[in-house]
Image (cartoon, rainbow, N blue to C red):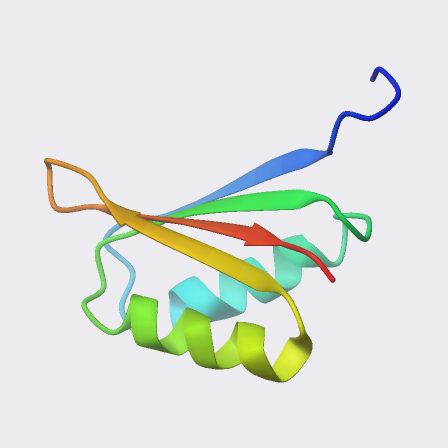
Length: 79
């Protein structure tokens, strides 16, 4: 990995119901270094709210976009 690039990991939680997308992301974040990025795909309607609450409590940054196929793409930058 080149200097200045961030580590990117991903979790495919499509089809999983609350609280599994968040639990899967928390588990994956253990392997992401500070400043690294985790991308999460989720179809659970509550995921956006859950991840924003989690990020606020943990100090991470979360960006959320909804794709055309109604899948949430959450990008978490680890604190």
